[in-house]
Image (tube, rainbow, N blue to C red; front, side, top):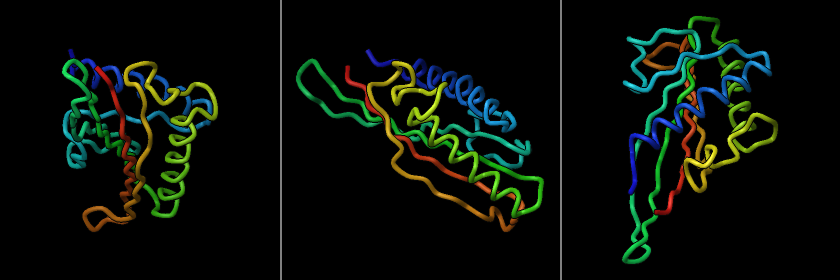
Length: 151
């Protein structure tokens, strides 16, 4: 039986713990994590914030007793409260670090299965936003992760 709460909780915990450790090793500050209201920039004003948005679950029947669940997770990195050029440079470094962490180039990494939470995951898209709500002092990177779980 698929437990949506457990999947979201475990992916969030693995990301928060392992990616923060990875950032610390790289000399990058630890972010604030936000999961309750994706991209509520009025509520969350930290210099560096990560928003996790479990965007969707879709299902494919494989047989009468087997199903493949596809999960789409959007990870948003937000940098703000600084000079525009420095924020962009920092955001690109953070996004590159996430990519390296996700694909297991260095420890600690998630081994593309979030330590067994899903069967397989891949980054399907990365988008950068240089201005948010007309402000060039807020930069956002969006990483879309597609994951699969067979049950």
